[in-house]
Image (cartoon, rainbow, N blue to C red; front, side, top):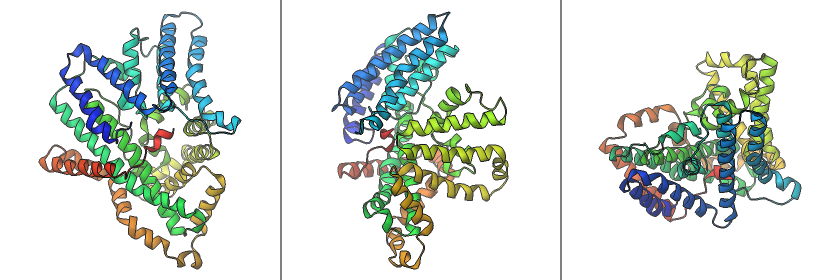
Length: 450
């Protein structure tokens, strides 16, 4: 089950909300836990062992936290023993295929819930949060369905205190519903429609496309990925609001950034914060001189690439970003920030190139695509006019996507979101999404693969 399923929209969510709003407060967290487990079980119904694995890791993490909270000696050893189990499972599922030669199914949401558990254990070890005594409360915070499968990665110390004391009222419900519909529109009406161009390029073969169409395809993939994941995160925030919970924002107009450093402060903010807090700073961050800082940065981006997937393209993607970020740390960042034009031109080139490495797992095909980007401008390549044909089909969507990923429309929306005009707009968006979903014109969430 996903947030963009009709069964979720018209059955699961209304039943859960009705229960949450009608039941006495002391039963609300129990209903939220039960609903979250049902939600996950439906997502892995063809592999029921995945929910047993998830619950087992949750219990081990809770028990490890209790041991860490009570221990006065050997706390570091206890920490690494507790962390080794979920991390070992994640690595096993992600990389077993390399050694067995067969594809291994990654349990739904495993990358996200593993990082959530590891973050909790480190926070207990550092004394940032107290070890949770209540197993039910711990399970509720970890299993919460709005954030379970694809984030946002929410620190335990941020979400647990909200349980049992959240405010539920019709205004909160209205705000959350509006936020949710906006995210649903990003996913169904923008990401899935724009993504059609990238799928078509794969179907006709990269070797057959012209240079202009290759660049157009990268723009399409960049927008598809943004509106897919930003849409999911926006829906998660909206669901949290409807349930009386505050979840962190995950995007802050990253395509408006003027440097890759700024981009990764705006894109998938909770994952970037996780690597900063639990990898980069513990390794020494920028406190031990420039050479050590660059080494720490390399470690972060190698691990980030490995977290996203086991194929070589993800490692290349991480290394490419590391090189850009290292150059910015050494000398480029200030120059980009002081320019009103060059920073945006730099990012207009670097963002699509980085997503090319991310999108194409086969290195041979990656080489073909790169060759078309730079070499597909000959008279023979342009003669077919493929970029004109596909530009006619997708040009308006691409322009609309480029406009909507900038800060201006978001500022305008914040001013009008509670007006009757905004209500009418959201009703049109919702029923347009329902039509597309009923017609099968939707794709799975892209980040369900990670």
